[in-house]
Image (tube, rainbow, N blue to C red; front, side, top):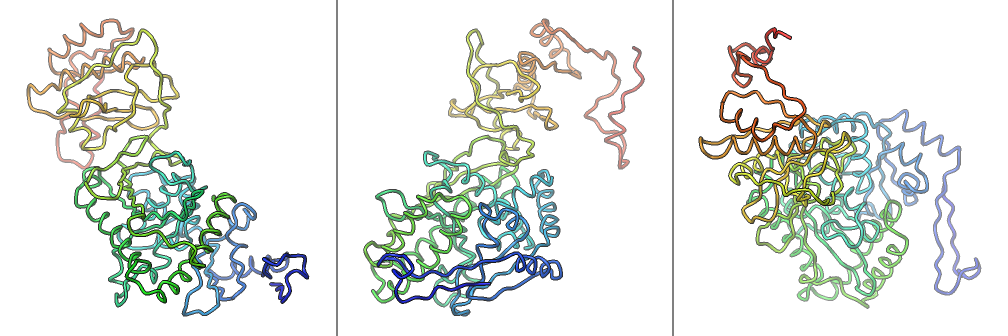
Length: 508
């Protein structure tokens, strides 16, 4: 299956004095059928070979049909295997997709086939081992989904993005794939967990290698996603990896150790640079990275020092409905960002382009700040770079309802009401805090965007105020003498909440 070019004189094959003999692995039709049958008969296939042909399985650009047929786990050459390359592969996608289904359902997200394929392909682009970790315990599957979403955002980013790291200019290294590199001497595998999740490597023009340590977390609720202890933990994990980097390449390391560590690092960097080129890395960025890696091995340049390392962290929270990530202020060196599931193909959060104010439109009314802030804490709303004027709604876009402004007075708090989801809003507060005023403002904004609110009212003051302010509505629905409160559950039967909302017979 492999043909080897072995020649002491490369120029005899048409190359120049700087060229080297190369090793080429090819798979013909018969051998491809043999691999297909082998995977059909076996759930898992383990290949240990110096010429294993990783590129055959992991080339979505050149061999998309083969790439779509297998899940592989392959890491750089390991010292305990000598010169062998170890590849674990499977064509059994059903079990992995089932794991994704379960994890998405627990996160409150759509477990559709499109979402599962979207996330699985992203994980495989980072590392096949991460896809296999979906079978892990605890929050491991959710953490892997968060890593997949970070990859998807970075794959769509460009070099001007201030949050995401563009994958056409750099590539990821999952540190779980190379634990020996970032495990302190004498530490057991169980004691090496305090490290970052990813390395982002890029080679900007005339800037040498740029290294970014990245930590990715998942939190189900907004309150815990913004918790100070989570930010402190992420900062600590990133800092631990940066300190380990200093131990490997810092000024206190002997020249002999640095030489060995450079060669080790270069082997890992080349492996993932080639993987990046097979997926999203541009050819120009790939060649720049290889040149900088060669310069580092030849000691023409040093690896980035501790003070030159970049630090970033991302927290994925399904309750965060913002279209853009929100920075988490914590006072540390790393930039931490909170993001939600809007990038998923089938998400309950509509992707809405920013609208432009038009002439003649009035300012949106502000509401009681205590109410808007309490709503933000339960994830019903999102901070937004939102329009400051009202625009008529259409059936293809959500209505953007301003609930208020944050304490700074600059950022509006937006509720996006759309038929793509099942929008509900609960407003809680003591008497006199402004609940009625808030409801009236919401109704006025809905009416301005051609959405007619239906009010089940039990207070005369809201009836009078609504009648005065929304008299121009073309349709007014009144159910006089409704006879029950739809928010009050009567009885303790298992279906009491359903029995409660059955309307009595109403005269036409």
